[in-house]
Image (cartoon, rainbow, N blue to C red; front, side, top):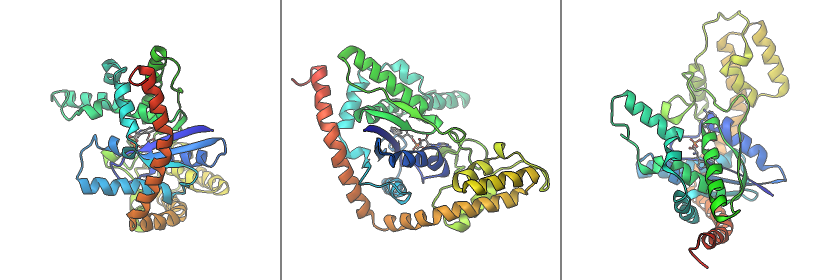
Length: 331
Ligand code: TYM
């Protein structure tokens, strides 16, 4: 079976960008027979942004509960916490030693922070920890450890998957064929879902719609989505509307066609948002309840993640041994 793998870091609540850009496509692949899904909470990646320990722990449970509440079947998927698989961190070191600093200098998360510092006339490395700088190496370890074929992600992670390929190629060239070269998979049209202010929806911009908000709050957030100032009766282009883009993810094909027509005739943004809330809430009310239930029983989540880590380690332990033989650490 082909491994499909993706991770989410616990630096905030799961939002609509995570769901539409990564979780939904990952869940769609998870039910296909030809794939072995490996989905995880990238907690050690989350540590690159230091947080209060209790908040961090809760956010980690939150990511795990979200996957489960949205339908991930832990019997089919290998579902784990990154920090529970120590082999990843050994591989991280091995890969660090064949990764050039130049490759990391070009990684966009680091570059963006440096550019921001320069614009603010600060020292360019302000706020850059080494974990953040070498973030893509750990991500390469995540991906390469499980001989991953497909990595469903949003567009901001594409470069990281390409870096994982580069690192795999360097290793294979020097030590012989070892790692499989992964491919990324992004969703046409939703690989960069905009947030409330029109910029990319992101935990760091504070412009997200967390998907498990209570209905009232969810409606309020939807109402905050920025729209143009066309009058209610004016025809609108559904294909350039964020509201329509999100609507399509939750509505039935018939509803989508009807809504497309309504846009071309002229629908007020208020009404378009109301309809969006209806289909979103219809889909999310079940997962929201399951999410709350899981969050009230973190021990259930722990047990599931522990089992998943055991499965992951059945793969990572022998593979790491093989890698260590190849590089001359063991015989
Ligand atoms: P993270 O936690 O920032 O985001 C999780 C996933 O959500 C996607 N995403 C979006 N997609 C579309 N529109 C948006 N506005 C949007 N915002 C976020 C992200 O692209 C991502 O797919 N480095 C990863 C975690 C990670 C990982 C991995 C992923 C660690 N190891 C190995 C894949 C494979 C991250 O920070 O994701």
